[in-house]
Image (cartoon, rainbow, N blue to C red):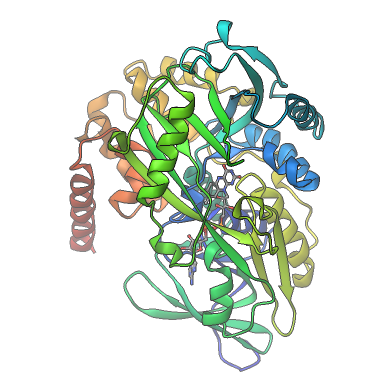
Length: 508
Ligand SMILES: Cc1cc2nc3c(=O)[nH]c(=O)nc-3n(C[C@H](O)[C@H](O)[C@H](O)COP(=O)(O)OP(=O)(O)OC[C@H]3O[C@@H](n4cnc5c(N)ncnc54)[C@H](O)[C@@H]3O)c2cc1C
């Protein structure tokens, strides 16, 4: 019962937004025993959280903007996350070729020294120098580059990280509603009355003791348009785009290039067969949901790649692209690249509390979530301790966080699994692969092979355990199969999903 006297289903927290920040907050709060509902208007990770460069990184270049606190926080998180989800997060070595017209060598050495020492490292090796004459990363580079630097960061399957946080939240009792926008909310005594539009179009009302706005690029418009309140902070939208091309080098090192315009571009080994190149930094004023790469960005990324590699690429070589908008806290910087990547939490207590999350990075999401719940739980009389720093994410509970040993064990337990499939599943699902395989003792028992290497057992798992509801969820966010499967894959999966829905309706 609320003060208005009528009963609505009321949660401690209603979280708006199923990106990394919303999912991370839901996980942390549910694990501390709070009742949580998370609503996401599209799919989990449908927006910025599936469009990142996918680095768990301190952000070497932020040292130039004296963001030592942010870099330190992010560096500390690298090892926490590598231990929590060794299947979807792994170490990556970065090579930075050096040329005379770039940042001076002493400056880079100082930066790398700080990068190595700002936070404790156990898993990741430190930095050093490489001579391209005798290092595998030298071969693909043009002859002008003789030596460079090498350092470590982490790689993450970003959209899967969101899903794993949502799964863990649900396993701790949270309700996760995808394809359910919050259309309006207003304070009513000591609660928020939230109007949600369900996937079938029906409106429903739920109550929230605290409303959490984790709407990413929509954080400000949500306050102004859906809550009809002024926003105390502004967000600055900066578009970043990536291109995917057939692989232009064949070794496991990633490159970080410092361009003459001072921007930084990464070229990263991607999905076995490809190279991922990005990103751009372009001020953006349109609808965050409609962001897309433009021809200038494609040309820019091709030109930057061509400055460094023997293998030249043109816009016609681009096989796939993706773009996202960084929801950056507006700190009035002149230049999009220098806007702070740190986050700010804004707690409005003029009535039932509203917590809004401005900015942030994937790398620091767990810390952000912890801070949010540390601030909110006491308001609900909850004094439970923090818990996520040492807790594995679903599928990440591998002894010693040793992925290679886990994969070997998987192949020994299921010798009938083709190596490539076992590797893909182990990477995507970690120890949860056991749920997907169930009692199957051979490939036929995984159900029909709907597309090459994609069996019904996996599709069912994605629908039942991971909220997949459309082909794009499956081919692009839960996996990257879109890059590997034939062009009609989306149609085949949508037909399969429609057949499942029809069959379920018949049974009901
Ligand atoms: C190009 C690019 C590269 C990046 N690279 C990195 C990187 O390498 N490493 C790193 O750490 N960070 C990186 N980042 C930053 C990182 O991706 C973002 O900080 C992070 O994903 C933001 O997550 P979020 O949850 O705040 O936003 P989002 O992921 O956008 O989630 C917000 C969600 O809220 C939902 N929503 C909005 N309004 C409503 C509503 N009314 N009802 C219900 N749901 C709603 C949206 O649909 C959306 O899914 C990068 C960002 C970009 C753009």
